[in-house]
Image 1 (spheres, rainbow, N blue to C red):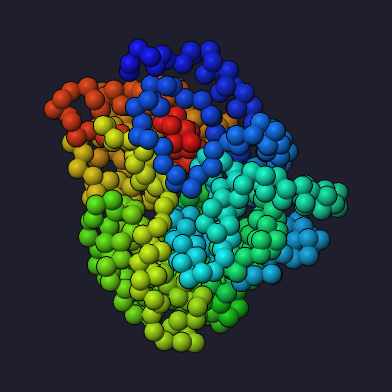
Image 2 (image 1 turned 120 degrees about the horizontal axis):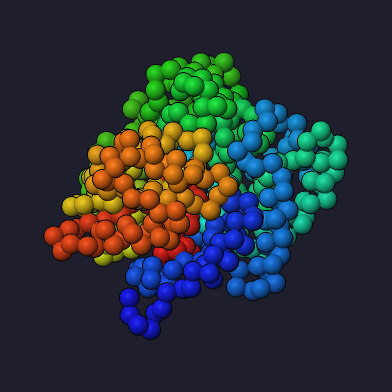
Length: 501
């Protein structure tokens, strides 16, 4: 680092972190970072993630809304009831019925698939509303119109518009509306107000009892199901599939990604019961071919209406190609292709849509020399997909992992997936109150990696500095890289620290 870029004083950093961590960590991530990391990062590009509002008054108002939402049940607290959200949308005039929807559940790949569906629909000149969770950097990311997060001003206005109705429902119920329920009501209201032509809605957790499930989507999408949230959803993929199958509505089309056998059986049984049509990856649609390309991959997809050749996707990993196949089939089903009409979608439009896709925090390169990759994998299946994508698309001679996880996650499974590709590991802790204690994480890491391969840094900025230093320390390792993973919150904070927020 040059002399004209001094280190940010530790006390200043600590003050900012302390101020931010008094808020719910799901509503914001730390906005401080070392100037060393920012100076070494690549020039900032627009990946569709909003920064804090530049206007101090708007920023203050947004923080007030965040604080009010933070006082409610967190989104990881699941109550198996739709009573509160049904009351809310009822008093709002059922805004979710003002437009058709595509509903997405599964364990991994939901947000990337939602972004691809959104891009395809937008390319065909439909106005879209996308609701996804959790966010990477800003709460406003969760509600998007026409492919971009709503502005802070519009987010605040939407909250103020429904606040009185929220309070009315709160007063009538045993428990107040949760954080996620209020955000869901805001999203549905914002989409109706826009108005949008189609909503693309990702479940928060599960399906049947998820707050989003007050919609009757004509297309239900199920991305790969694996073990996550087992304390709430079930201990096998089949049990988890029972809860997730709740988004399949009578007469809908179900687009099924490749699934474990028990999960597929549950989904097919539910589809039969409600007389829903089914499109299965590997049967009615799928990935026919793929090859590595500069900045992503080149795919040939089989859709419900035919083959789509030479489709470029600027994302890494086989899992993203499979997400693309699912997204394509979902949009085809939405347009009635494969059922009411034959023939494929316009090829040039499909190619342009996929070429425009971004998915922040999913094998995202945020810096070069050394290369730093962010991936929000927080369960073993996600970590395996990330490891395979890294091995396939990056020729690292040495990879340093930076891992910060959350309590209750299968951390051992995540670390075991990373162990074959990471020569060394720096364990750390993000600012969330749900973050796993760094010493507890280190204990598991030592069991998986061995003592000599694990370094402990309690603060994320120090962990990033340490990993980058390890990647740079010997010239023979000029092809070294850094992977930051373990939690969406860890990835979001790392993005800000590396100057991408």
